[in-house]
Image (tube, rainbow over all chains, first blue to last red; front, side):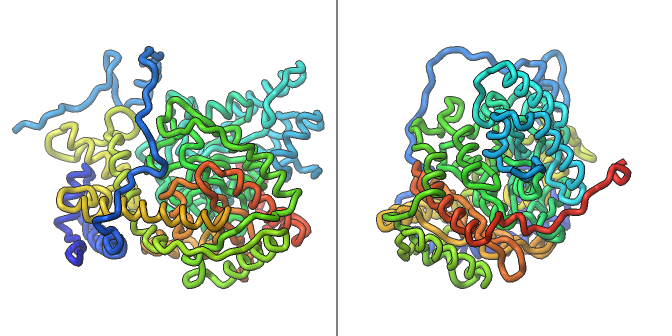
Length: 101
Length: 510
């Protein structure tokens, strides 16, 4: 998979937007170079990842875990809201969710 | 026993408390005094919880005086890495985005520590969100290595390791995603243990990579790690990945290792975790440790784990991918920092981007973007999919190696502590510090670092012991055996050879 590398500045900007992180122009420049080097070196995983090898998502085999459907006390609302950047009427206060489009 | 209570091991403190040689208030105050004296130089702590610690100590002393039967470690103070949430105590994970956050709940392991009556001295410094191998990525300044204040204490848990190495705590909690307990242990001359994945609850750990993260003990002796591991370990219904199996006694295994020979124990040296890239003095101390294990009756065999050469690559795809998802919760809405965009409409999405741009440091941004890239359409199969396959291959390598050996061993880190700034501008060089510790996280197996002496540069070297999943007792047995043999050969603990730290006087502090 020789085509995997080369992350352009535009590509970093696109991914940063997906990740919801505002980056300054100098951060974009630096990250483009750094990520290119990193991705180049980690791309070698594809050398041994042949189709016959199954993927593992977890270190130890797991099955779904359920607990009894019994209500448990939640955290006190006041304690949780005390740590919020903004709260109103016992709820988180957030900026408008939708842009004007 | 030493007159200085801070020089005692946790086991010795527990013994002294039980015998009423001293009180928990005395031992806790001794550690708080030590913190006041040396933490200006070391900067292991982000927060010192003096009142809370002394209140717990007083309570334990009163209960003991009343004849109450107390847990073994009751009254023994402990430090907690700042990535573990503590009710009523600030928790930042080393990030500006959580500056001033006081969690409304305790992590399960903190609950267990509090129930057992251990005074919590404070929260220790770390790389932001545990991303790093030097603690230089903390948003709150560097922690310095007590062996040389111009050098890194390892990372991400540099604060916990330095606190224990500088006698600012007898016990500490660390977390290990790719080596963040073991590598700081190696470079500070302390013991660090990453338990089997699922052995210690992750509830209340601020997650980096959920399939790799594991909390564990940071101590000065193998026995102390066993005592703390037994205290914090065990099934927790609030962590669906925590397992129900009960481990064989770790304390018994440590005692057995320290007091009996290793006849019949096969110790496997991993070919791929030695040689090129490992500092000469690191290799020399490793070879000597092998000789000591051999002298105690262990059989040394060489094993090959060919896919370990791909572990670093797989790790730097899986970890950032999981981190990019886990850190999505830092959106400026429910906790932590909120920053509004400088211009344009103030929508939730734009606030989130502005908050993360201002609140995250360089390494966190780097990993989130790398992870988002690896998971994005068109790249997922090539990157994340391939990395998951490598994970299978590494697990198979471990399975085959554990057919030939009861434990596997290697140097914990390729080099001793480096100077501040040396690798900060070269992410790949920084990542290579964890080359020997990462395979265990990918496979979920337990690992321990034991101090193995000093390299040519006079700095500590770590010896890593790995065991099969849920056979943590094996690494305690072998680790304790090596520790006992090394103590014999040195005539005292390695940390006795650490330089005397500059001590702040009351006037300087003012």
